[in-house]
Length: 414
Image 1 (spheres, rainbow, N blue to C red):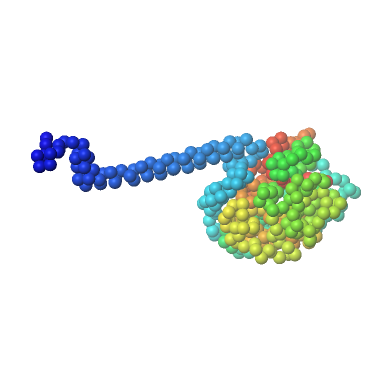
Image 2 (image 1 turned 45 degrees about the horizontal axis):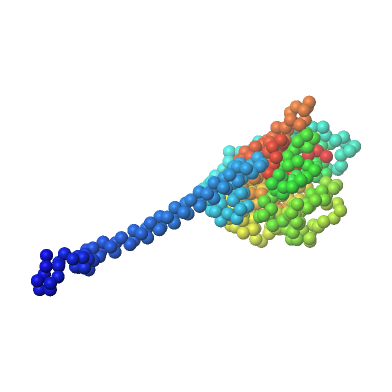
């Protein structure tokens, strides 16, 4: 068809292109609306890439945790693997959510104290002529909750008698007036009658040692108890020394448990209150002192997240443990299922500690087991009892043949 006025064909391509692209506003609108769709595809691809990366990271971390040796749970191995590979920012919020969700209710009153074994085994005890003088029994623990539970704050003897005297006592009490349904436990140990030893773990500190990372053979046969050490060394801000070998360098100012070759134990700041001498056989460091000269560290607060709660990344009321020494040289271990840095320090102080430090935290790692030997024909056969029932790990944790992943303390007959 030809337009006679202009002599042009109305069906030619230039005219058709003009009519489609310039004369049709609806077509222009449809073209404009297609552009966001291309952007949405880019977003979807980016999200998919992030998901693929996260799945890959999780897969690698799960595989790494599965390959990690030791007797800890998979969840604990996975959390440790993530922290060891610079992923604390990922695992800390997960732990914060989990422990806050599991936090005990405030108030309440327990039905009673936990059962305490009166005798931890049929062991051969040193003769009276070979036994040194014993430390005097500890004084009752001052209470902060009223009315008191029957027997609360009183020390009950446990473990084998040494030269006719108890060498360990257990006391139970409430740590504060807030979580009054939760019981904190303390163990008093006489190092003149029992031998306390630092044991290396397969992963913490790792390395080769004369003693295995568990209690087997004669070590199991003489074991009275065992309890957890401190944080992982990447978090502990301290070192590890045992029998002349330094696995992790000792740090000046760090809170330190020091064991001497005559069995004495001391706790203090490294370099000022305690230091290296030829008599030192073991040193475990963990953070900074929690109790010093009978006073609680000013920074030990109910909401600490930087010093004594950094591994959880939150001001969480959670299972915690600590260790201290009394003015007459006894060793005191304290643990509970619902403690803050402040209440742990107060519990150590009330249990008689004049110097003290924190050990490990969270239910996976806080462990104190009392050991019995029911078969006189085979003393290496061990039955364990947890210090309190909320402790998650097995009552025979630290007993071989399964290697213990972290350092720990064993208590045995001399």
